[in-house]
Amino acid sequence: MKQIIYLFAILVLSACNINNKQTNDDTSYTDDSEIVVTLGDWEEGYYKDEFGDNTDVKLVYQKVKGTHQYEDTEKMDMTADIIVDKEEVMFRLLSANIYVSDEDDIVFKIKDEEGDVYEFIMKANKNGYLRTTTEEDDIILKNLLFKGGWLKVIAEVNKRWGKETYNFTFNADCLENAFDD
Image 1 (cartoon, rainbow, N blue to C red):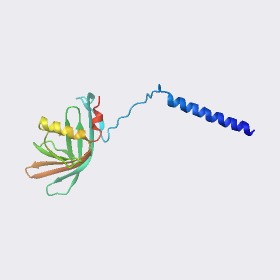
Image 2: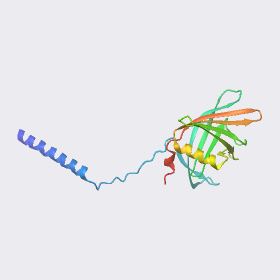
Image 3: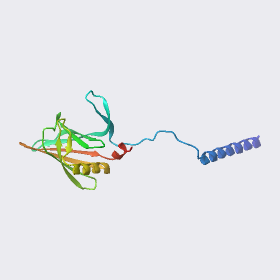
Image 4: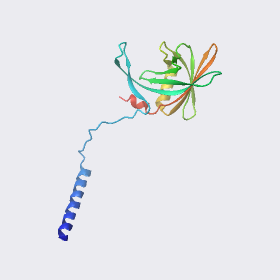
Protein backbone atom coordinates (compact mmCIF):
# COMPACT_ATOMS: atom_id res chain seq x y z
CA MET A 1 0.00 0.00 0.00
CA LYS A 2 2.84 2.41 0.82
CA GLN A 3 4.34 1.73 -2.59
CA ILE A 4 1.07 2.60 -4.34
CA ILE A 5 0.79 5.91 -2.41
CA TYR A 6 4.46 6.67 -3.14
CA LEU A 7 3.96 5.88 -6.86
CA PHE A 8 0.78 8.01 -6.93
CA ALA A 9 2.62 10.99 -5.33
CA ILE A 10 5.43 10.73 -7.92
CA LEU A 11 2.91 10.70 -10.78
CA VAL A 12 1.09 13.76 -9.39
CA LEU A 13 4.33 15.71 -8.97
CA SER A 14 5.48 14.72 -12.46
CA ALA A 15 2.17 15.86 -13.95
CA CYS A 16 2.45 19.23 -12.16
CA ASN A 17 5.98 19.76 -13.46
CA ILE A 18 4.92 18.90 -17.02
CA ASN A 19 1.95 21.31 -16.85
CA ASN A 20 4.14 24.12 -15.45
CA LYS A 21 6.75 23.56 -18.14
CA GLN A 22 4.11 23.65 -20.88
CA THR A 23 2.60 26.88 -19.53
CA ASN A 24 5.99 28.59 -19.25
CA ASP A 25 7.15 27.49 -22.69
CA ASP A 26 3.92 28.40 -24.50
CA THR A 27 4.65 31.61 -26.41
CA SER A 28 1.38 31.58 -28.32
CA TYR A 29 -0.59 32.66 -25.24
CA THR A 30 -2.43 35.94 -25.77
CA ASP A 31 -4.24 38.08 -23.26
CA ASP A 32 -7.33 39.66 -24.76
CA SER A 33 -8.19 41.60 -21.62
CA GLU A 34 -8.69 45.34 -21.91
CA ILE A 35 -5.75 47.58 -21.05
CA VAL A 36 -6.75 49.98 -18.31
CA VAL A 37 -5.23 53.45 -18.52
CA THR A 38 -5.36 55.50 -15.36
CA LEU A 39 -6.44 59.12 -15.48
CA GLY A 40 -5.47 59.88 -11.90
CA ASP A 41 -7.78 62.58 -10.55
CA TRP A 42 -9.00 63.51 -14.04
CA GLU A 43 -12.46 62.48 -15.29
CA GLU A 44 -13.44 62.09 -18.94
CA GLY A 45 -16.30 63.91 -20.56
CA TYR A 46 -17.48 65.54 -23.78
CA TYR A 47 -18.65 69.01 -24.63
CA LYS A 48 -22.39 69.34 -25.04
CA ASP A 49 -24.25 70.85 -27.98
CA GLU A 50 -27.12 73.32 -27.68
CA PHE A 51 -29.52 70.43 -27.02
CA GLY A 52 -27.43 69.02 -24.18
CA ASP A 53 -26.18 66.05 -26.20
CA ASN A 54 -22.53 64.99 -26.19
CA THR A 55 -20.42 66.23 -29.08
CA ASP A 56 -17.41 64.30 -30.38
CA VAL A 57 -14.96 66.70 -28.65
CA LYS A 58 -13.39 64.92 -25.69
CA LEU A 59 -12.28 66.71 -22.54
CA VAL A 60 -10.99 65.82 -19.11
CA TYR A 61 -11.76 67.76 -15.98
CA GLN A 62 -11.34 68.00 -12.25
CA LYS A 63 -13.49 69.71 -9.67
CA VAL A 64 -11.48 70.72 -6.59
CA LYS A 65 -12.19 72.57 -3.38
CA GLY A 66 -10.33 75.63 -2.25
CA THR A 67 -10.76 78.94 -0.47
CA HIS A 68 -11.88 82.39 -1.53
CA GLN A 69 -11.26 85.62 0.32
CA TYR A 70 -11.95 89.31 -0.11
CA GLU A 71 -9.18 91.56 1.17
CA ASP A 72 -10.40 91.98 4.75
CA THR A 73 -12.82 89.10 5.20
CA GLU A 74 -12.69 85.55 6.45
CA LYS A 75 -11.88 82.77 4.01
CA MET A 76 -14.85 81.07 2.41
CA ASP A 77 -15.15 77.77 0.57
CA MET A 78 -14.95 77.78 -3.20
CA THR A 79 -14.79 75.28 -6.05
CA ALA A 80 -12.52 75.33 -9.09
CA ASP A 81 -13.13 73.43 -12.30
CA ILE A 82 -10.11 72.60 -14.43
CA ILE A 83 -11.07 71.63 -17.98
CA VAL A 84 -8.58 70.42 -20.58
CA ASP A 85 -9.13 69.38 -24.19
CA LYS A 86 -6.69 68.97 -27.08
CA GLU A 87 -6.92 72.68 -27.88
CA GLU A 88 -7.01 74.55 -24.58
CA VAL A 89 -7.01 74.71 -20.80
CA MET A 90 -9.81 76.47 -18.94
CA PHE A 91 -10.62 77.19 -15.32
CA ARG A 92 -13.90 78.16 -13.71
CA LEU A 93 -14.04 79.58 -10.20
CA LEU A 94 -17.18 79.33 -8.11
CA SER A 95 -17.66 81.01 -4.76
CA ALA A 96 -21.02 81.47 -3.08
CA ASN A 97 -22.67 80.22 -6.30
CA ILE A 98 -21.24 83.13 -8.30
CA TYR A 99 -18.89 82.55 -11.22
CA VAL A 100 -16.07 84.99 -11.71
CA SER A 101 -17.05 85.96 -15.24
CA ASP A 102 -17.47 89.71 -15.23
CA GLU A 103 -13.84 90.66 -14.66
CA ASP A 104 -11.40 91.71 -17.36
CA ASP A 105 -8.10 90.37 -16.08
CA ILE A 106 -7.46 87.71 -13.49
CA VAL A 107 -3.88 86.92 -12.52
CA PHE A 108 -3.17 83.20 -12.04
CA LYS A 109 0.02 82.24 -10.20
CA ILE A 110 0.75 78.52 -10.38
CA LYS A 111 3.49 76.86 -8.34
CA ASP A 112 4.73 73.39 -9.33
CA GLU A 113 6.32 70.72 -7.13
CA GLU A 114 9.83 72.01 -7.91
CA GLY A 115 8.89 75.43 -6.52
CA ASP A 116 8.80 77.18 -9.90
CA VAL A 117 6.09 79.84 -10.15
CA TYR A 118 4.34 80.69 -13.42
CA GLU A 119 2.11 83.72 -13.89
CA PHE A 120 -0.71 84.00 -16.42
CA ILE A 121 -3.22 86.71 -17.25
CA MET A 122 -6.62 85.08 -17.71
CA LYS A 123 -9.82 86.44 -19.21
CA ALA A 124 -13.29 85.09 -18.61
CA ASN A 125 -15.89 84.40 -21.27
CA LYS A 126 -19.63 84.95 -20.72
CA ASN A 127 -20.00 81.49 -19.11
CA GLY A 128 -17.28 82.11 -16.53
CA TYR A 129 -14.55 79.98 -18.14
CA LEU A 130 -11.10 81.53 -17.75
CA ARG A 131 -8.49 81.21 -20.52
CA THR A 132 -5.01 82.57 -21.05
CA THR A 133 -4.77 85.76 -23.07
CA THR A 134 -1.88 84.78 -25.34
CA GLU A 135 -1.02 81.73 -27.41
CA GLU A 136 2.43 81.62 -25.78
CA ASP A 137 0.90 81.46 -22.29
CA ASP A 138 -1.51 78.77 -23.47
CA ILE A 139 1.42 76.59 -24.58
CA ILE A 140 3.28 77.15 -21.30
CA LEU A 141 0.15 76.32 -19.27
CA LYS A 142 -0.51 73.12 -21.25
CA ASN A 143 3.09 71.99 -20.83
CA LEU A 144 2.90 72.68 -17.10
CA LEU A 145 -0.23 70.56 -16.74
CA PHE A 146 1.11 67.75 -18.94
CA LYS A 147 4.28 67.67 -16.81
CA GLY A 148 2.04 66.49 -13.98
CA GLY A 149 2.41 66.72 -10.25
CA TRP A 150 0.63 68.80 -7.66
CA LEU A 151 -0.01 72.39 -8.71
CA LYS A 152 -0.90 75.18 -6.27
CA VAL A 153 -2.93 78.04 -7.69
CA ILE A 154 -3.52 81.58 -6.47
CA ALA A 155 -5.95 83.55 -8.62
CA GLU A 156 -6.19 87.27 -7.91
CA VAL A 157 -9.04 89.47 -9.11
CA ASN A 158 -8.61 93.22 -8.74
CA LYS A 159 -11.94 94.97 -8.33
CA ARG A 160 -12.84 98.59 -7.67
CA TRP A 161 -13.44 97.90 -3.98
CA GLY A 162 -10.47 95.59 -3.44
CA LYS A 163 -8.78 92.34 -4.31
CA GLU A 164 -10.33 88.87 -4.23
CA THR A 165 -8.06 85.84 -3.88
CA TYR A 166 -8.84 82.23 -4.79
CA ASN A 167 -6.58 79.39 -3.61
CA PHE A 168 -6.74 75.77 -4.68
CA THR A 169 -4.47 72.81 -5.37
CA PHE A 170 -4.89 69.98 -7.87
CA ASN A 171 -3.03 66.92 -9.10
CA ALA A 172 -2.20 67.10 -12.82
CA ASP A 173 -0.70 63.56 -12.96
CA CYS A 174 -1.88 61.23 -15.75
CA LEU A 175 -3.22 64.02 -17.97
CA GLU A 176 -1.12 62.71 -20.86
CA ASN A 177 -3.05 59.41 -20.72
CA ALA A 178 -6.31 61.15 -21.61
CA PHE A 179 -5.13 62.26 -25.03
CA ASP A 180 -3.00 59.31 -26.19
CA ASP A 181 -4.51 58.31 -29.52
